Image (spheres, rainbow, N blue to C red):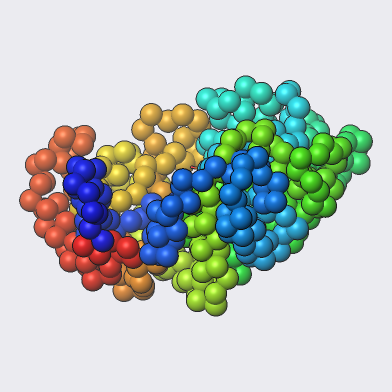
Length: 443
Ligand SMILES: *Cc1c(COP(=O)(O)O)cnc(C)c1O
C-alpha cells in the first residue's frame, strides 16, 4: 500500500518492505504479522487516551476501546488458560518490570537464569534499573545445555528468594516446570514466605498457544509474561497472564499470591506506565484471534519441525550446536569451535548475502564477551513465509559457504576481497526469498 503523503519517511518504509522481501529473516525473535494486525496497529485508536482499565477509565469516550481491550483480555486468557490477562505492557521488558514491582520490595531476592547462560537482560543484568532495585541471583546451564536444576535448587535454598523466574532468550530445551515448582514449595515452607513463580515465555509463547510446548500456568506457575511480537505473531508489545482472584485495580489489596492479578494491574498502571496504546491492544486482540484458529497450531508445529531440520542440516554441514540441537524454535551455533572465527564477523558476512541473524554469547563465553563465539537463529519468520524442509537445507548450505569465506579473512573489512562470491550468493538468496512474499509488504 502506497502512502498518500509525500513525506520522505514513507520512502524509507518502502525500502524496508523491499529489504524484508528480498532477504531471509533468521532472527528468532522476529516474524511477520498479518495485514489485519498491521491495519489495527495503524488505526485511529492511536488518537485515544484511556488511562485505567475497561469500565474504570480516567477519560471519557472509551466505549469502543473498552470493548476492544476486553476482547483482547478474553482471548489472551483463553489462549493460555489464565485467570487474568493484562494486555497493556508496552513491551516485554515493561511486563517483567511490572511483575517485579507488583511482588517485590527493594532489596528482595529474585532467582533467574544468568544472562550468559541464556537468560534475558531484564532478568538481572547489572545495566538495568531492576538490578539496582532487587537482588538478582543467577543460575546456569549444564554442559548439555539444560537448566542446571541442582544449582537452581541449591541457590533457592541458600538465598530463599521472593521470586523464582524461568525464562530465556537463548535456550533450546523445554523447561521442567514441575521441578521448579517443587523447589518453590520447599523454599516457601522453609522460609515462611510465599514464593512467586514467574515464567518469561517471550520467545516460546506462540509455541505454548499452538499447543506444542507446555504451559507454565498449567504447572503451578503464578505468572507468565511474554512479548506479543515474537512467536505469537502480534504487534510489538507485552502481555502478563496470571492465576488468582481478579479484583478491582483501583483498590489496594494485600500482597498474597491469590491477589497477584490485582497487584499486577496496579503495578502496570499507575505503577509503571501511563496511558495504554489502544491501537496496539487492538492489534493484540486481532493477533490473539488468529492464534486461536486451528491453523495456528499447524504454524507452531511447523516452526519446531523446521528448526529441527535446520539444526540437523547445520550439523551435517559441520556446525557445532549448543545443546547439540533444539527442542523449540531456537538454534545457537558455536561458530568459534566449528570454524575458528567469532559470531560478529559471521553475522556481518551473512548480512551481505541477505541472511539476517545475530551474534550471541555462548554459556562458555562467561559474561560480556566483546566478540561472542556464537550466532543465534530461529525459524518463526521463515515458517510464516511458508519455507519448509528443502529451503532449510538450502539455508544450511549457504551458511556453510559463507563460513568457508569467513575462514579465509582476518576481519569484516577482509570480506571485501570476496565481494563477488558474496554477491552471487546474495542473488541466490534474493531469488528464493521473492518466491515467498512477506504479508503486508506488497508494493
Ligand atoms: C524479547 C524478550 C524480552 C523483552 O522484550 P521487549 O519487548 O524487547 O522489551 C523479555 N524477555 C525475554 C525472555 C525475551 O526474549
